[in-house]
Image (tube, rainbow, N blue to C red; front, top):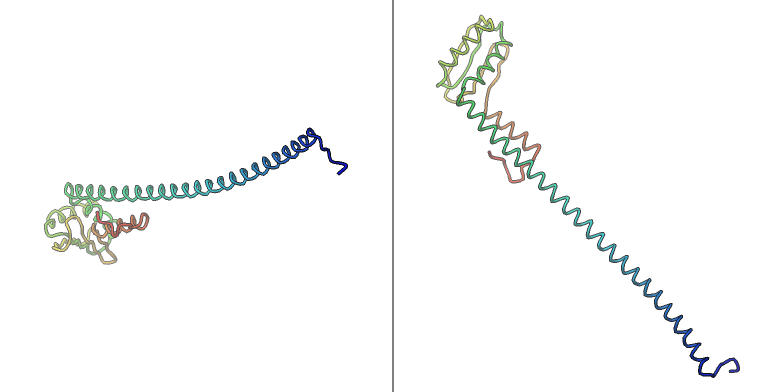
Length: 191
């Protein structure tokens, strides 16, 4: 007890030093706790931000895919409308191209058979004779009308080959190609 200062000012000095040390320790502990809480909040906000960004990127990718699919559908509708208008305007144009191609392959064939819709037999005969003369085809030409062939379509046959001009099959192939690229999220694509 000899080292104890019993004077009023001595206790006060020792109490203030302890109080200052306690305050400093409390301040340091508060800072550490605030730092831990801030790091926890920052980690939570960073995770939220990452999830929001992923969600936005997924929404944007879905929107872009929907726009691409819609554009493909619009292109198909437009192509079909143009093809229909072209067929109405010049029903023999595609057939003329097919006959030209056939004559380039079958120039020396003994015969060439063209099967078309019954309604266009006369036009097809005139066209085929004209193109055969232009290409120097000397074989026999036959144009046959069939009810099951769509106007503008046809079948061309010769001894070593032939081919079919089928707009419905071509349309189906185009739709399948578009479906492979863009998928069919709403079921089958009908245009």
